[in-house]
Image (cartoon, rainbow, N blue to C red):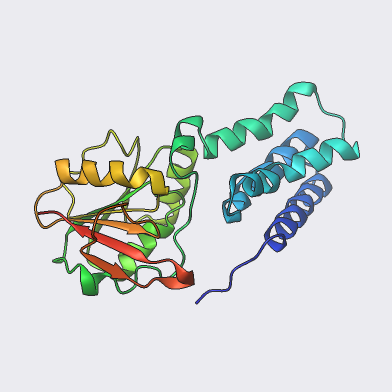
Length: 241
């Protein structure tokens, strides 16, 4: 199992890295604005390690806020809006009603194929794929599957496609997308979203297809199976009939 960075170590490492990048770029002759943008991008990318919204915000905004308070550089007022714009690119407002960004832990789905066997070439979807950890987990469980990802954030979609060149990653709303062509739909959502997810799966997935949820079950519904996942997070399986 991979080691995890616990709070506030993840924040301290992210802030240290952003400041180190800022000074390295300045020493190389980059403008203050370019160094600000680069440091902020690094901080926003590192913010995915935060387990809650306020932790992600602290990690993502920690560098530009500390830079502004330090008075090290003088920038026009509009330049300080760029960190907020970058955060909105990664966490668009439309996605706030769903899980903001919950990365799938390494190894969480390694034994999924034992409970939900699928033939080679089966199409599967990571609904809300973020940076691609769930897609990578699906590929480990089903090495010969046709893995797809769907992500609302355009920036995250680009980063996910870069990290998972073997998969098909598209931008869109998971609730408006058509799930009917998939043999398995995987998601790591909020508990309150699960009843909606199961209703959509029953309406669109063909008989025998699977809805797989990390950590959160559908309240009041008996699962077809349960996988004891890593980090104390179970995986719940629902097969369509």
